[in-house]
Image 1 (cartoon, rainbow, N blue to C red):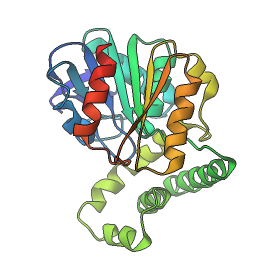
Image 2: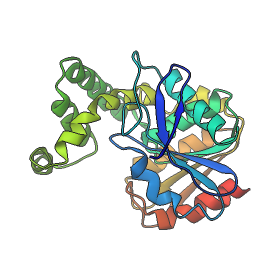
Image 3: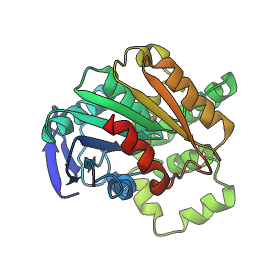
Image 4: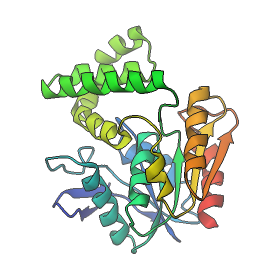
Length: 259
């Protein structure tokens, strides 16, 4: 991330910008930085100014306590101002929830696309989400960052032997470094349910995308997001999972953002 801007509360934000045309800001999900979504930028830069960034508490961006979702929305406001005063947003996973919050806030957002924002679609999912957030906040309050990362990896369905193997890998220290930001992703997802009232207030077009090979609940969550937004559209990408291939995703986003 070779550029910097500053959010309203003084937090420095690191970002990159490539290409030319209308601005599209890429919002990463949990346990990730702008580098995670940067490969997608290369497939959109022929038509757009594409802006991956490090969310607060990650990568080369700073952090300022106390955290609130409003502060992360202000971060996007600062980025939008830095790249010309108007932008579309693409958020992957929990980053999609942040993008939707930003669109509902009244920021100068043209369009919003989200990929598999992991909202719960039944009461069992809501219960599991509540258990996760309670245990996560407890681990972070006690500075047990490794345990917090483990909780997240279990939530994603990673096998126990893989989690224990990851603990021994060189990447683990970096994962523990961004563990506090797991609470930020939990905050933007709220109680885990699709935020119907928030989506009803989004006045710009919303595209909710899911992978055709992802679990059925992921596709249902995306459909529910599209149905709750006044100008919502749902798309499924055949053969794709939560780890979506930028080559498959980019044409869908380019068509949507160019409209």
